[in-house]
Image 1 (tube, rainbow, N blue to C red):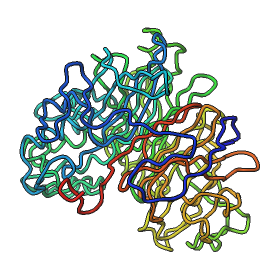
Image 2 (cartoon, one colour; image 1 turned 60 degrees about the horizontal axis):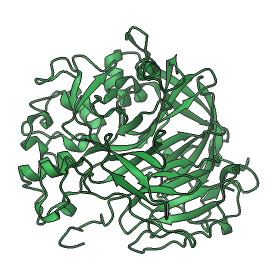
Image 3 (cartoon, helix red, strand yellow; image 1 turned 90 degrees about the vertical axis):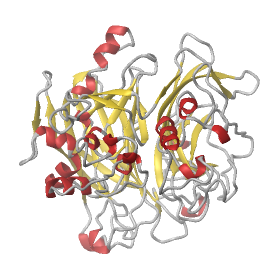
Image 4 (cartoon, rainbow, N blue to C red; image 1 turned 180 degrees about the vertical axis):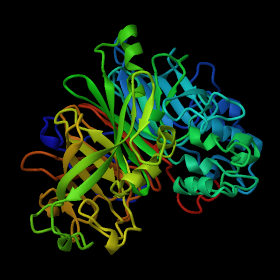
Length: 567
């Protein structure tokens, strides 16, 4: 059983492969639920690749998809509400003859409409359990031009623009990656690589501003996408603060298609990979989020408000303010082995595990009146909220190997963090939580957290790669009996508490996939490949139920030099 639960994971693992198809175990079948361009809004046109328009794309399912959240519809038998985000667009796959040096306005506006999120009702087919889209009343497209409310301590001089002198009304959400859902029925989605959308037709010279842009990977020249040619809000010389309005956890209420989504700045601004929820016994809400960059950090937010049970309108109204007040923390990891035993090779230390303790360092607190206090010397609360990475630098947070999805187990409360890879880490930069230099394959961290407190214990459950290699570790399980795994990205749990891990960028030469990983009992560390996606794709947003699994197949065919003309 996966994770010590009772869900049957007795499937025969899929063999590693390079098939240009979705591959599932014997006894299982796969089916497409919804694809790029499928109509979502009633009356939306059928997809016409040769004649795509921005108006059509705005009512059709968007491009590359990462997060998936599926809520059962209590009032409708075998109906579900699916929310998916659309991380980015791959224009050479979308347009014939795409010229990256000279995109057209129509192409750019189609890309704006292909970003954001989709909410769509699904119906289960009675004869085989497959899921089909329904033109339901909840269906919605959120795009790069949908109004959002920016809320919290970032609001101020650093978020005000010509079009929005209040600093609170932002058009759109960009590069949404992993996320989560709340017990009150909303979806949390993390804005990740927002840096790629901003450039300038002029020049940026202020040294402090140049450094802040550099720390977030924002170009101070022309952007690759050239959006600044078509909307001056993406031009750093014209609107220096627009970029500060992206990089947050956004909250969407899929049950109210007329609602304004919220960007929660109390959770910090960085390349959010996810936003997942743990609720303690007394109703305290804790949100975990990783910053997906080499040498960046793991964060958590502890709300000072407790959750109101139930989903009545009054309860939901209260709960929708939970992420407005509390304290934002960043993590430090300390190993318990002598430094001499962490030599960069990945060899286990003498105690037989990469493990240790950790601490959560406070960065920012927001009180019930909305007043924010910085815990970082030399930085205001607004600066901590907008330049959270620099706050993490200032307090000495532990530099990790690309913290991607992080999720607490609903059964044990242990928190699992995927560290995807970091080929830039040198021998002199290793530590017990990141024990390999030139780390191509990544690792999975298991954290036993004092959720509402400031200390934790940790160990590496998986040190990924070729099981035959000396530098890999599978929780102590027999490495000759596991599936090879590389570049863990998303983590998820099945109803029995079993852990599932999906991958992005497999460096072992075969396609990415979805794996079950046992976390408890004698099989702890057993890793089995359940599903693989086509060539060039990553496996995202896994949802695993007793009778079905859902994955997002993101950017199939996206290889260097590939295009519609050269697939």
